[in-house]
Image (cartoon, rainbow, N blue to C red; front, side, top):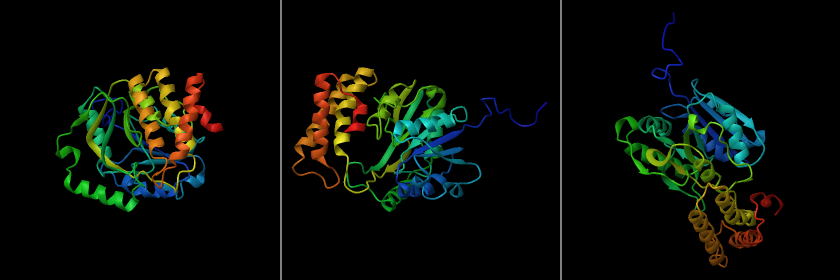
Length: 313
């Protein structure tokens, strides 16, 4: 005879949420994420910071969180898929919902509560991405202070999940936005990020989401700001330019990206890089990206395009 609820009974067992944050060489970004992540109205059960060396983390994050949250810093080989896989391997079996936040994402105070409520409301959903209050990815980037202001304004006028209806904004997405995506652990299972997409691993989020069972949605159940933080002028634009062509081609051949979606991505970036090369944005090296595009195009024509080639460019 036992007292209290059975921890294995689905009717009484509490949902466990794990948050995985991967970072390389951006301790300032991580320090800006600590406070909003620790202040969640529904605390995370586990938070993993996956870095490539201890210096990436800056300060010990454990003191920022309450007793309910188990906080861990782990070191993994450099590369977003490798780091995310290291986080997945650590939490599988100890989480029901797995959340990926970028190190420059600032979540609403009710983000985790909204993720939990959304998955409870929509059992057919395997993965979701939230509403972006603002996205600095196509700009010089937003400061931590500006992102915090925007989130505070959102929280001031938006009731928590229990006080408003939750909406599915888009259904059956091609993929989820990697800066703020959440999955049912039961649907993830043995699926892992493709480590043949090295370093920043452009489009790895699309590839991963495409291999997860269940519907993929965008929802207003949770929200946040993606700062799009940058560390000065782009210094490896040729690598990203190569990935902008080679990665969609690789994922189309793999079967996780449709031909039309892959072609649209490639053409859009090819055109943007070449048309803006003469007058580029101060934070983007368009000429280098265009050069990488051309190298990848030649490799595609020759039948030897390979995402891993960026490691030798």
